[in-house]
Length: 162
Image (cartoon, rainbow, N blue to C red):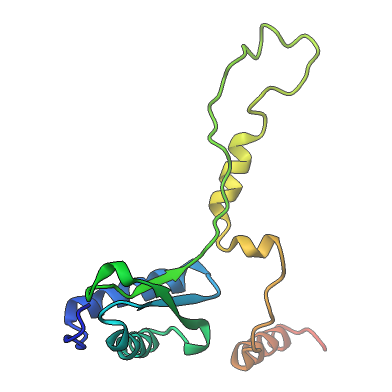
């Protein structure tokens, strides 16, 4: 981003859209827009960061989820970039397939071998959509009144009494 070009080009818009889609599908809770400070384009970057924030909003990222912070960029001259950052977690296990010992030959005490349960744990980790669900519960979603009415009507129509 130069100090004189404050226009969001279509390719920059596409990049922001891709980043927003990745953010929304990652279950991350917060995003940061890092704007340069101390560079030749620092003043222009303030305005540009607001345009990026607005564009993120167009793609479904709430401004409440985004913070704009400066970073020291005096070494970039007047070409310091604006950076978009978010952190997401994923569930994973260590790689399976470490078969250092012969399972059958040396296991006279009937102890668990090194990879015991690894495939099951790896499979479970791959099925978890949001690993934060393992740490804390999600908030309640609003009630779907239409679906509730359909379910109760179906229950009553099949002869059940409430």
